[in-house]
Figure 1 (cartoon, rainbow, N blue to C red):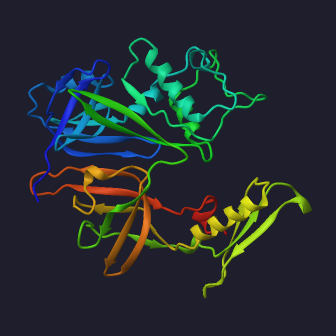
Figure 2: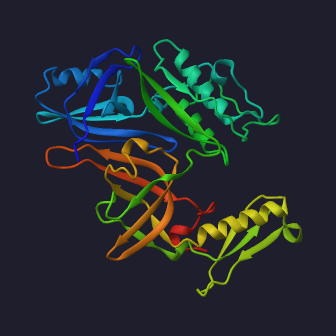
Figure 3: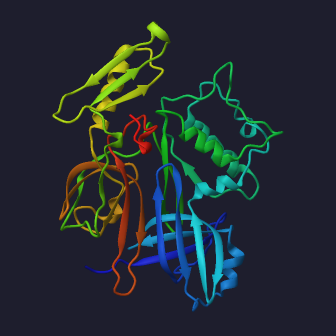
Amino acid sequence: MTMPDYRYIIARATTGEVLHWNLPLTEVEFGPEKSGPGSLHATLNPTYGGGLSDMLDDAGDVVIMVERNGRLLWGGVLWRAEPQGPKLAVEASGFTSYLHRRFDLHGNLGGRGPYVGADPCQVIRDVWAYAQEQPDGDLGVVVDDTKSKATTGTAKDPYSTSKSDPRNLGEIVDEMAGIADGLEWTETVTWRGRRTERRIVLGAPRLGRRREDLTFTTGANVTGEPQVIKDADAYAQWVVGLGAGEGKKRKVVIDGVRNGRLRLEHKLETSEKDETKLHERARRERLARQILPTLTELEITDHPAAPIESLRVGDDVRIRLHEPHTAYDGWNRIVGWTVRPGEGETPERVTLKLERTFKPEDSSGDETGEQ
């Protein structure tokens, strides 16, 4: 298989002016993530004619974009350039990392708040609008017009920020993404002519979809030695669902099945008032906890069954493994990945970051084995 062609492009953060179309980076590793900016780590070749001092001076003022076979895969802000002998270690993070270096200096995002029953997607759009309307603050980031069913702020307790106690803008975005059944986000970058579109993709209540068109299979596009963990700490085929209320008024439902295994139980604490919804949540929790194998990472190569450029954060994909000590066939959700472009005789490698498609909503105590 032909080695893909990578380019590393450096542009001025605010103007988009390209400073270098093919920066000679080596030891590159980059990738996106769910509800996070993703990152890039690389080394600048000492033969770079522009001089290492240029990169040192540009930290915090330029963006790095990764292009694979003419298609942009990742972009972010260069934050650190550290000399290591004749080489220069380079670190960058996605565009949302910029918000963690900015604050709400006017309060309520310049008058857009306080928020009562507001859609957290709109609050995120307001954060970016506020950040980019300030002098020298425009990164050219566009945010999706996605709407969610979640809300933030009430008449008695509006969501607000104060001028006298400036809030970090990145933390506001994190808070919005942390609202239950609200939203998830990730970043993309694409060419629009010779300029790039830097976009925040919102998913409500979640990113991605079930991808019947992609498969990952031993002997085709799975490499390395997949680590499938069979850990019964979180396993349960009986779930006790507790709803709102106290004492005898509290709703209690039990959902379980006999499956020939030792009986294991889990208690699900909720504030659910509707008994039908409580039954639904208990059943969903039980189905999620009956999945014993866990797969958190998977090394893959580019393949027609799942081309690298087709990967999307949040998608559910089917994985079939037939390893010497592991047989696995299940659906997993892609929550991020890292790419290591090929160098010399070393081929390109991609490591998918995974979580269960059916994930327990209450994982407290799982790591310690509590049920």
